[in-house]
Length: 166
Length: 186
Image 1: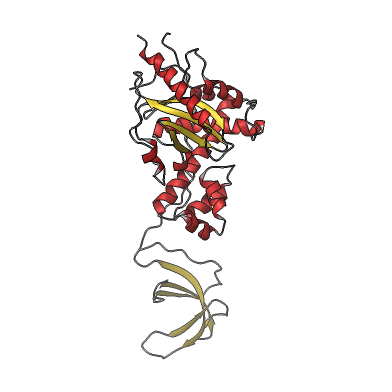
Image 2: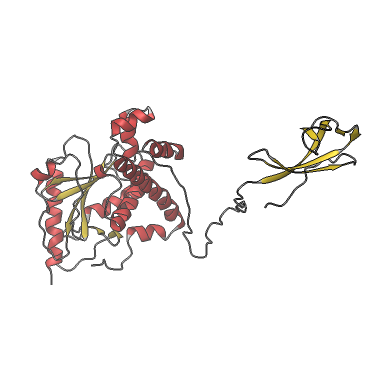
């Protein structure tokens, strides 16, 4: 395994938003963005091609605002799914992410049970600088499918391993 | 800590005309949603109260606050006004070599005199000779022929428009003058 170059969505004073990379060097979110940018994401059933493109533009601009200002436009644009896996929400699409200092270490800022008791879903002010996007999916049920969260955790584990390489 | 200087997706989008235009719209949408949410948070109103003021459903308020769909400028202004704020639009150069917007030409501010004075042309309609004091007593009208002691005249008056006090009178035995006479202040 070698050091990888992750695709950067936006980099600013507050955060660098990047696409996490798996062991095989694939990047689920980078691949997803490539398809939704041109309206051809085939596993997004509820969005027409022009709506996908509109979503892509919003997501890119929202990541830029996040990198520059430290927050998303609206306090309900994010949520913690489980064990330090968070999600950016807009419309029917979700993009999961985690934060890291870039050294390969990771520790959740706040446990899920404590966070779920907040009614206003605070945005943690002490997120590390790197926000790594792990997976993207369409929210079709009230609760996020456990498989999506497990996949995000797997991508996180594999991505952090790249940082530990000498 | 800083990210490496590889090109980001944002920079990539900004490097083409199509991408710049798309990002301009998306940035405006993101900024608008941020602004409306900030206004609502700062106002102390909750969504139900905002909906009541705007006479819309709570669902519509949620839709706007979540940034679902395109918003009209008038809708943005109404939401902000309901929260106690006034929308202010501005634009700045986005490209090198583009000049800042010119400020609109403004009128010179008027001097703040304590009591503005004006000159106006009046005609005298009646005169009572031998009234109180040595001066004739006159009544002023713009619409009737002027006569003082049976002679047609023009009658100029400088008066304080705040108090209505006549400060200066001039009577001319001359042809009628049709325009007001400007005077300098002070």
